Image (spheres, rainbow, N blue to C red):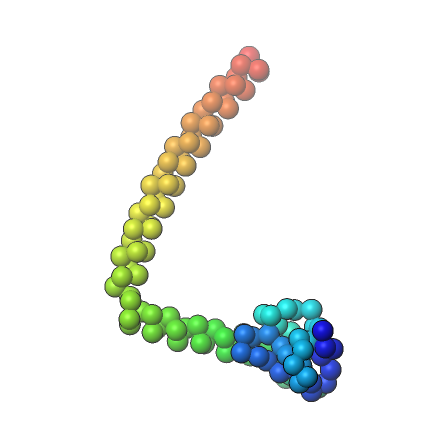
Length: 115
């Protein structure tokens, strides 16, 4: 790994850091680096906010992509969401029933040992 030194790193397209020599910076964050080592030498309070700004940039892109997906396949995703939500409700109902039965049996067993 190439050491991430002042001014030697920049964000790559995958969101990680890459040194000017092409190696990966050794900030320890890995491919999803958000620590700000890519900023280079930065001084002052504003530098503390650079990692937050990078995350905000990624979140904005994510929101923009959601809008595109909504426009292109939103109706189908609504249908998928409904199917999955209904399946989850059935699953949760069954789990509640299992839990209630389990609690009843645990009480009966406790009564046997305590009685």
